[in-house]
Length: 109
Length: 115
Image (tube, rainbow over all chains, first blue to last red):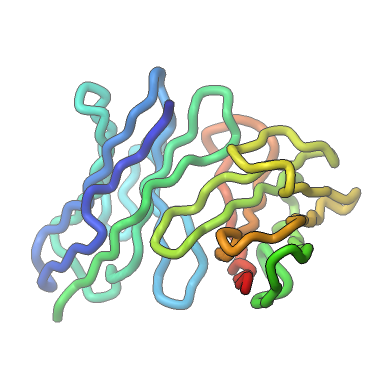
């Protein structure tokens, strides 16, 4: 069965400090992994996906198949990064997403 | 482009009633998915519609049904409401296919409270 685990419900860091939001997954195959973000009073939106290997708003995420992880990282957190972050998985042959329970990031000024 | 629009934004029902939620996809999208997000949880996949047919379904009972219209808009119907159906219902649109570029665009959601 597929599962996405985000072990931290809440995470607080100071502005300028590095931030890492953890995501581990369970899936017997090669899934696609995504990070979605929801800023206050805004809609859920895509932040980045592993196949693009891109950096969005300074965030990066590397898929580690050995550790089945897809942690989201940013070297210097900004106040505007405060939001709810969801890790999501799309299985092979599927067209839907399986979400984790989310991590609320607060960046302290 | 207004993106994905959902209605109503909020509604209150009582146990046993039925509810219909509506969704208009982003312009150019042909696929609509519905998700249920309970308080403190991530969105859970209910089902997906393409070409007016249910294509995939999550682990939800038959009380949850849907429809897609020729203009790609969609409805989610829930019968015999239970207290546990209280949640934010999210609609997401996309293009059909498994392309890596195929990403979901979410609406703001319809918040359903069952008393």
